[in-house]
Length: 417
Image (tube, rainbow, N blue to C red; front, side):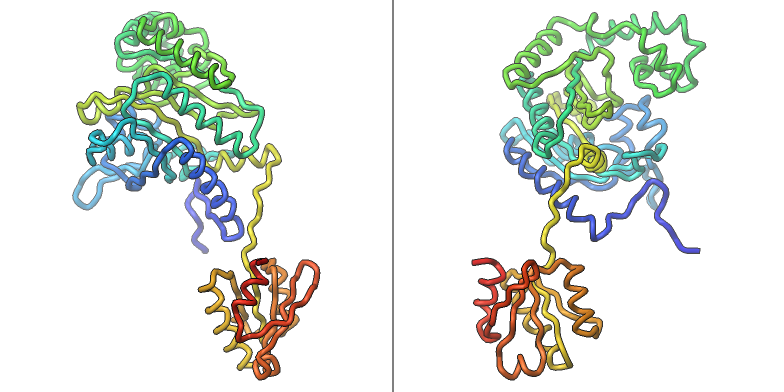
């Protein structure tokens, strides 16, 4: 029986890789517009990072993490999300000593053991932006602006930005008491996991995916009625900044996000009723994992979900030209010469291919067509002896007589110079 890829994983095939390259290139350029630099963190971390950073009562920690003991009996977890590792790297490498705010972005695989469904895999890939060092609401607005810029850059419309203010530990304590008071009368209706959250972290109940728990959460008190003056002022400034940037938004008091490190601002970007991006401020994360009180804000979006969104919005990704010149051959001498010329032309930045399957000339031309080669050239004994060949432009059949000893002239034709 053939071995297959594990459930919830997907191969990226050669004929589709250009889509990812296009997206990653565009995302890098947009991140650069906002002065963000790339960070890369390990694919696994000590489990404690996610327990302390993400929160022991979250769905991610309780249900979804891939955790195991290594040969040294240390608890290791495959990267469950990108923010906590970025925060750990920020502290461990002393980036707080650099000029602040420190703006960074990343592409990373993320591992979650969850039900496999459309746009949701057990190994998926994320583009994330994290900014450390500033507590200003203007930075929240800029990070949201970057996220919206991404979708606009790909031509995605019908976007809805929802924001909320979930306060700080001080005002959240008051809200938790009010929430527990409400939930107490409906405690028996909660799922077992939410019952375990009731005392330790009742806000996590608002993020439960259980149908009954969602119905209960819909009627719960909203945190906006309990935020302190400082958190309220921050939220009002965020709204002013978004309006200044001409970014439309809606306040959704039911957004809490699924990770414990969020404070104050949380937001989600929706396209056709599907969440395509989420993030917010997490002022307490650095303090939780290191003791240093450093504010931060960021977001994450799934690459697979982004691709799916583009597809559903009928946005085509331009297909690049993979082969500039296919050098076909006849006979052994032609095969050797085509190999030699292809190698030289590659060093001159011409994308070349030649025959390695001993195909007939007709079959080679069919292959060149499948490769969508821009130009083709056939080398046989006559061409080698005369030092001349014909270069054919496949689009219209136009032919150019070329000197095989003057490769720069071939380069000029192929590059359209």
